[in-house]
Each structure stands twice: as C-alpha cells, then as structure tokens.
Image (cartoon, rainbow, N blue to C red; front, side, top):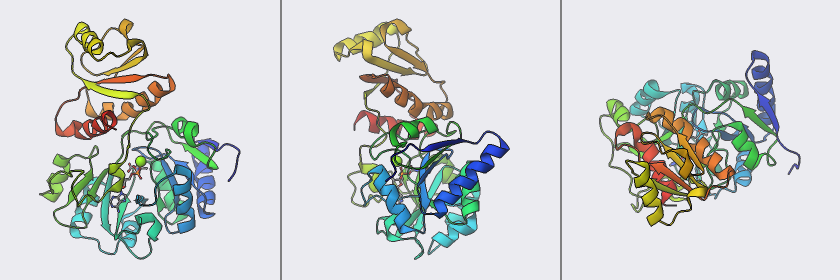
Length: 338
Ligand code: TXA
Ligand code: MG
C-alpha cells in the first residue's frame, strides 16, 4: 500500500477536467481505487467487473464484506448489461429519474462479481448526474462500483477535502468536482420484487416514486426479517459529536432545555432553519435555509465542520414531517440514535 498522499485534481476548466478524466480512467483501468465526485456524496470507485479492484474498496474503507456496493453506469445499455432481468418498471423509473440520485436494486447479471453484491442475487444500479463521473465511466467503458468515500461507519463526504482528510493516505487520486449538489446519499429502491420497496430514503421521495410506480411496499422496519440493505443496520451517517434533535420557540426556551440536559453550551454547535438563536450562548450557530434541498446539500458539511472544531454536541432544529424532508429526518434520526 502506498504511503504518499493522494494527488488532488481539480476540474474547473475544460483542460483540468480532461486531464482528471484521463488520469482517473488510467488508474481505474489498472485496477486502482480513486475518489470521484457524484451529485449525492463523493464515491470511492473501482472497476465493477474486476473483483480484485473492488476488494481494494473494502480494504480502503474497512467495510464489512456482507455489505453490497452500488454499481454506477453512464447509460441505460450499461445498466441493462449489469442486470439479469430488467423489469418494465425499472425502465420507467430510469426514464423518470436517471441520471440522478436513485439506485435501483435488480437481479444481477453473472458479469457482476460476488464481491460487489456481497454474494446476494441482486445488484444496486445508479446512473449519477455529475458530469465528471459520467465522463470517467464513458472513458473506461465499464461500470464503477462505488460506496461513499468515507471510512466505514463514518460520515459521507460532500467535498474533496472531506475525503482527503480521512482517506487521503489510502488511494492515489482524489478528484475535486465541487460541493455535492444533493448532499445526502441516493434513494435505494428495490424493484427486484413486487411491490417495489424503498430500502433507503433519499431526496427522490416516496411521493415522486409513487407517481411512477403507483404503489410502494410499506416502510422498511429495521427489525423486519426481510430487510435487504445491510448498510442500513450500521452506525451510519453520524458525526463524532453527539447529536440532538430539538424543537424550540425562543432562545430562552432552547437554553433552558440544554440546562435540563446538562449540555455544555460552549462546546455545542446549533444547526437551525427557522428559530435562529443568538450566537452568544453557543460555540457556533449555523443557519441553513428552511428548504429541504438546501438543507440536505449543507447538512453533512456542517457535521464535518462541527467535528473538526471539536464540538461535543450538535443540536439540530427538528425538521418538518413532510415527504420533501423525510430523507433528512431519516439521517438525523440515525445520527441521533447511533
Ligand atoms: O448516493 C449514493 O448512493 C452514494 C454515491 C457514491 O453513489 N453511494 C452510497 O454507497 O451511498 P454506500 O455503499 O455508502 O451505501 C449503499 C447502500 C448500503 O446501505 C448498501 O447496503 C445498499 O446501498 N445496497 C447496495 N447494493 C444493494 C443491493 N444489491 N441490495 C440491497 N441494498 C444494497
Ligand atoms: Mg456509505
């Protein structure tokens, strides 16, 4: 394993974009692992058809081998080549939401190695909308297996610096494609059985899916025996600081709640969208607009910042109970109850 740090390449001019595509593709063709931007979170990519290359992903992340990896494609054809069966519903969903933050779980083709699917009969497929990863997949001509580019059980990265900080000494290249525009991981929808079931909520929410599918299986209960997404069971999506979800009306109300909970306010980071407390009581107050898309985009970067600043607590203002906010509420609840 190499000891020097990853090369960091930018993509903000046509020349630098092209250079980064070429270098990433060369490394991927040689069986290496590289960190690439996607619109959801940064991914740790390898040739999905090469089991040795995919094994390197597990090693770099410290990921348990029972957790399958999503395969990223850059065309419908490529997706269908990864599937043994392509149900008509998958076609309709792909037309509606690809490229974009939706992963479709379908029966896997024999070309997908066991290590990608953790030995299971299905594969998760996603056509990401970020232009850089699309260009790399097209250049390579093979799909890319890619989990989020973080050590197993840690927070997903939404920019290149997040990746560099935690994994920069474990791979040859990190490509900087800017701040991830969606900001939380894709919706994972199992269409290998009927009715389709959401395994992981994301910004493409139930209401949007229902417009295409007409029906969805009930929400996945984690103690449910048919849970098919092992990644959901782990302590995922959590910052290092302890996280609390609270509702408050006034500064005084919030301060009183922290008194009762014996929280050290001088090491507490507040993330608020509607009732913004004055800064003096807490070590940091961040405001994210009361808009689900803006909130998702900024949330993990705020968590990363709080962790880097050594916050002991993160208090997040409770979010609305509507479809648009459901994936955010899911991540916040997991982070609050790790
Ligand atoms: O937005 C995303 O999906 C990002 C970017 C990089 O594309 N990727 C991502 O990958 O979040 P990862 O590995 O961190 O999370 C993938 C989730 C895990 O919970 C895994 O168990 C589940 O998807 N998954 C993958 N393949 C599956 C399959 N065949 N069946 C059921 N669940 C699957
Ligand atoms: Mg992950």
